[in-house]
Amino acid sequence: EAQVTQNPRYLITVTGKKLTVTCSQNMNHEYMSWYRQDPGLGLRQIYYSMNVEATDKGDVPEGYKVSRKEKRNFPLILESPSPNQTSLYFCASSSTGLLGVTGELFFGEGSRLTVL
Amino acid sequence: EDQVTQSPEALRLQEGESSSLNCSYTVSGLRGLFWYRQDPGKGPEFLFTLYSAGEEKEKERLKATLTKKESFLHITAPKPEDSATYLCAVQEVSDSGYALNFGKGTSLLVTP
Image (cartoon, rainbow over all chains, first blue to last red; front, side, top):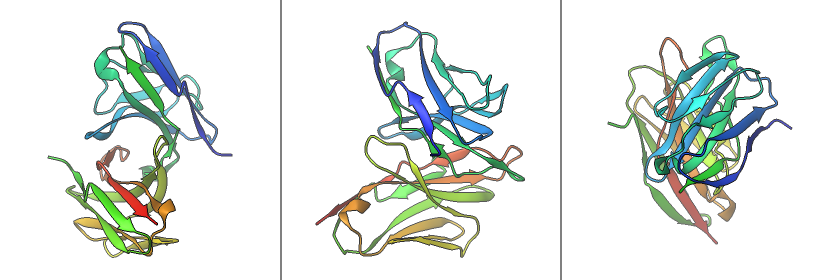
């Protein structure tokens, strides 16, 4: 079954304690991306990756890091989490065609993060 | 200014009561417009892609249409299981051709 898997699904942590949210896809997609979803603000892109070792900032990258060492994995790292990073996070992946990345994203189930 | 605006923010329908959701967009060059469905506590699920004005796509009770300024998601004779948040996203023509801008969504509730 085609899927994007995120872990953990729920996490409560404290300010400053480094954490990593993992994301893995089994569709051999080149493109992967992280979004955060907040009430009233909608989905906003944090980082994206066009392929292995190719990552770039999205609209709200401050306070986050990513890496893409393998095609299937795209972890999101919060080096020193702060309360304003409390949010619902989604990882997504997509194939790429002749015209670039398609807009047909496959999303994970989401990771709800609370930073106290 | 938001590139993608969805209206209404929330909509309540009786089962069988047809209606439409609106997505208006302002981009200089549209590469594609996408509709997603999101159930509570889940990730968005892709529904449709529309590329050019006049294009239409259908899936069960849903029909998406596109003009040069907006898209409509028509829901015909909805059922309670159609209750969800519907998201619209646009992809703009650019050198990289990848960024999607999402609207804030329309929350649909269909009551029996």
